[in-house]
Image (cartoon, rainbow, N blue to C red; front, side, top):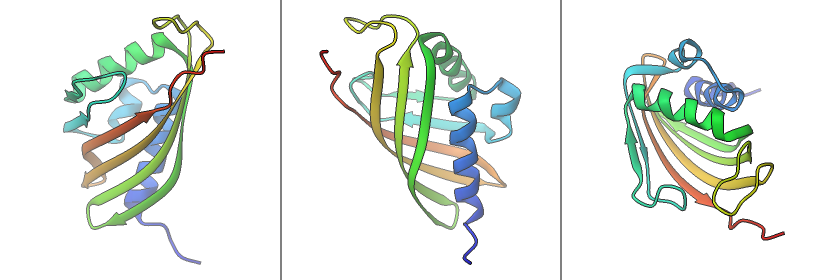
Length: 137
């Protein structure tokens, strides 16, 4: 039996925790104090975004208000040294209306996430989020 690379285990645990809506303390278990998260331009953030730890926490709080639930499913993961590349399926069910979409609508995105790990903590996260078009039904 092959053991999973420890940075892949960290990445999986991190995505499971984010799915559950972690507290700031729970998030700190995974993220270095100097973490940088870069979200490349996508349908929800057309100009992309760059966040430090405080901004990641704030984005998490806004997400918990906007979403009734969310789930990250790691479909594939590869690690080399301090780098991890992930293929992730994300689903989020709206708690409140978003534009023309009603509360209860489920959004889906196919995500490529690249992490850099230092001393067992994530120091860099780069996301390429490809959102499925909303189902008009």
